[in-house]
Length: 270
Length: 334
Image (cartoon, rainbow over all chains, first blue to last red; front, side, top):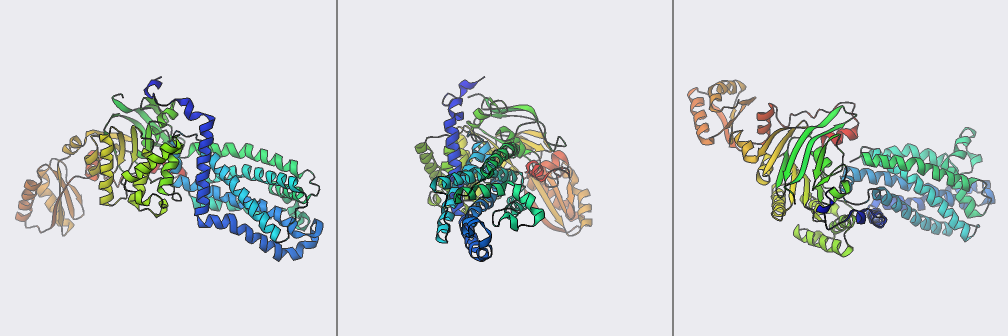
């Protein structure tokens, strides 16, 4: 071993947890800055969810109002929109990583003495911070149009945690798609067959009983519905049934499968 | 510092489950403190070689020592002594020039104040100070390249890998970049650069290897390479292919190398340009053939390739199997 030829630096200092955390923060800051500087990203992250709230609240709210527990569609809708927005937002992760790959940034990062996991760690952390922002915006807009979470502050915060955890675990899947796609346009296209069935064939916008019978089995048991049900029950203060635990199990299961996939794909690409 | 900054032995890299050999036993040694050139057309394996030496890709076979460290066994040590500027200006378009450099400084684990100071200094050195706080997406191609090179230099690495640093640049930007690279080498940096341009290799590189289909087909100094070729290319253009063919027979003895006839154009590599041109003119004139054009030019990479391999650089088919994934194809070709 000829480690003596680099007297100025030691290996330990570059691979320590402290540096890994710093690398993650450096890259999530970079990803968050981009979020505010790309107009389409701003639209997707902030404006679109607000439009969805207004659209569903006033267009569908009248028709569906009496069908939901408590008779207040807006209280049913807002938790759903929160989950839906985090899923749509994660498409940005797939696009962003595909662009980084195309532009040679992943290659650059791989040749730096940084912690390699920071590229995905920073990206998914940035996703989470964006989701916190979305939570605040949608809650605010929700309040303006009549949203009243009757569960209280603690249950509301618990709901936020359930939602953020689910979104975090799912974003590793979008990271995998971004790294596996040949370019960013394809990455975006590849996510659509995933996100539309998961968000619309679900209990995000309408109660299960209003879905066609043949769809109910899928819709009731898929992870997005479970997350939406859990968030909704916690926020509204109604009995959550098993949905909170099932949602947490889904989150753990998803990240256990998706994170290794994404990490392995990251190792392969250059 | 040892005599060689990079020592690569019998490097093989395959893609697509071994069906495509991007590198097929490449051995090279880069002397410390100079510019070493990796010359070759698209698909010859230049980029794959740079990616292996910079720990981005691992070799399928072979061993590479960079700055005294093994790229496979000690990649994190290697990453601390190298800078890489890849084939595409790898800058984040949504960050400013300053933010790009500062980010790379942080990722090199520099102190915050050092990273900031170094970023500012590099922006000044590279003529980007006025654009430091403009988003990189507003930069011109030449500015992006300079920012990219600056990013590779943030940690002041002793070894620098530059993959086609001037491809796609206008002549002035190319000159600027060459001057920067020369300045770095004067300061003691070792540079391995890949290029498709003989002119660039000639200007910058003390030693170079020529790569074709993943194999080294020639190596030496730039002047050795060119003298093996003849100093000048005589280009004669005729008004018909018949004339060109008749003239080929009359003048092919002027050069020891076979004439390259392409339609109405004859190219001949010669040692004494003007004298050879005069002789060719006399013979063509006395045979009553009308010459449409005459030009003397420096040999290009094409001429080197024609001479070494019998095929032109741009014709060199990047032998990429059809069933290869698009990503592999991209990796193998660029």
